[in-house]
Length: 218
Image 1 (spheres, rainbow, N blue to C red):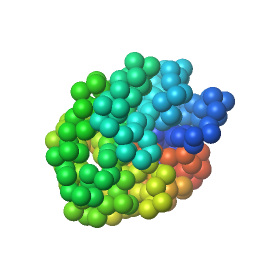
Image 2 (cartoon, helix red, strand yellow):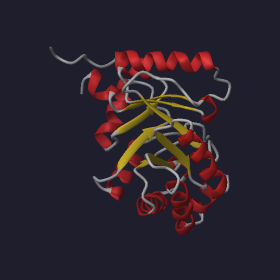
Image 3 (cartoon, rainbow, N blue to C red):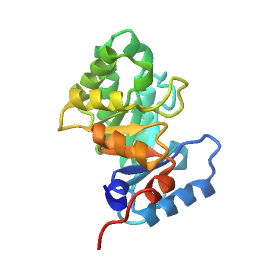
């Protein structure tokens, strides 16, 4: 894949809690220069002015997921009102590890109800075993989510893995998106995630990744 093809799959991400408005302006400029699909920033950075064609994503229930469904829905509604095109929500991991997939589905559905655009569900795959990954992916699909996403990038268990991405893709099928995020820092890692089934990447090392890929042929 060439640089432009991969760029069109990237959410150029800055979620460090100490990130400033100036830092966010920098990633917007980088995203516009490299023609990434979106920028992903914290809710408090919205509303965000971006060039035409660049989408805005934000995170809710972030990074722990240990928020009530009502709070997640309220965050999502605020994000939509402030111009977010896409919402990346973190599931309640305690529900996932105890196998309460009906409750996971219910909390996703509560957010889905207030999000008219794209909803991505962060499952923190490094925390889960294969059975749990399958269970939460099915819950996300049943609740009407558009994507399942591997990781916040903040959990000590780790980020995306090829195995998790492949399992997530097998579970949700071709009609849903799979976003790989967390620990993807070079072109080789990005391409491995895409080969495993990811059709969106959440990365902060966007410039390094894209500079490691060939430009499109004239």
